[in-house]
Amino acid sequence: MSQPINAALISPALDDAINAQVGREFEASLQYVSIAAWFESESLTELAAFFYRQADEERLHAMKFVHYITETGGRLRIGALAAPRADFASAEEAVTAALSWEIDVTRHINAIMDIALQERDHIAGQFLQWFVAEQREEVSSMSTLRDVIRRAGPQGLLLVEDYVARRASAATAPAPEPAA
Ligand code: FEO
Image (cartoon, rainbow, N blue to C red):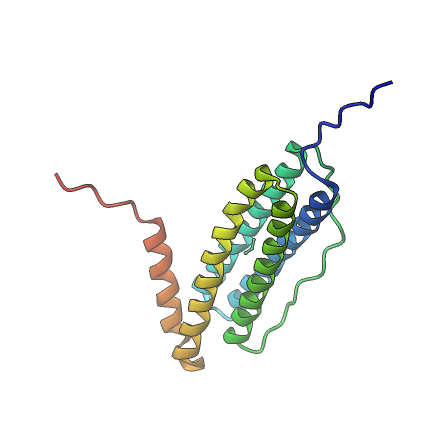
């Protein structure tokens, strides 16, 4: 009797690794909600809004991985999530925690990509490219924010608020009309 055809495109190793990453992305989302709420309690509303937006992005990252698992015939298994850290001694400490989180996530994305490359799984590799580019952008923007906070110092956080507001409005501004 012939063996049934296994239609799953995802390997067991990638299924495990991506399931673990789903948990990390949801943890990042919760961590950023927690950082945002801390900034809000410090009346730093632009920094709070920045981290609420980041929290939404992390949830979208988690959902991209969820859909990848279901579309490739894997099985979603979300593990227990770690409680987010709630207290920070300073704005610099909160943003440094976010930066180190992003660096850690980058390491995990690279490790998942390594599995895809070892397996010559081009479908996974193409999917993961988006996350590779996203991590470059996220580590870079978090690192810049940490540097701006350091430069401004604890008495200069309103300058940081201006910086974050300017970056947010530049990101949502419509593209300029092409010259006639
Ligand atoms: Fe989804 Fe910021 O890593």
